[in-house]
Image (cartoon, rainbow, N blue to C red; front, side):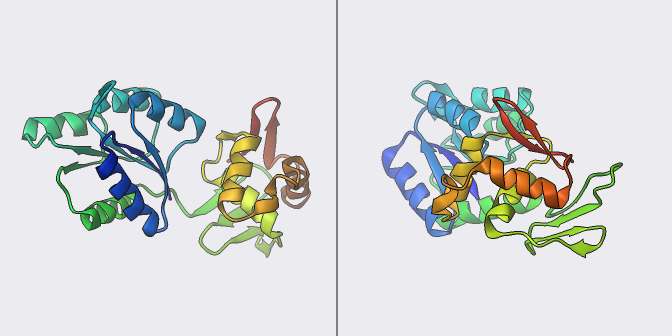
Length: 222
């Protein structure tokens, strides 16, 4: 999972990042509110872990701004504040869980996994409602069906489709798609034109399954 970690303490931040990466999570570590804002705008995290006392402000303000903007990614607040009132404020601001410092790294990992399970998007998607596409996408089985028939996809085609399917209806830029493919070990992603791959997907799925938004990117139509 793609995690955003906001923690200004170098020793703690490094320990948390290392522990999460050892559990196969991808971690983008930020040390200030400004860095975290930019990171979330650049690429939405699957889950965010945020400290509340930062050099440039209060993490709750960032959380409130995210929620006010309509963000839906889960957030776990990490803080030395152990008063019940502080925990209530964090939950009211939109946190999905709350962990008081000092905490055990294995407990943190367990909290991440638990919140991710609760907030996980459906892994089996029915696309093209009201259209003739009849597409069923199963992200766990890496399988796609159209009108009950299995659709064969290349590794690169599947990777692009799975990226767009993380949030049907959301526009993904070419840079985002390439970054995700390279993060999966598909080092030749840049040399395989995303436009070509999308074109091949449209031939298999239907011309309206993936829309192009000039200057912005591509969107899987839900």
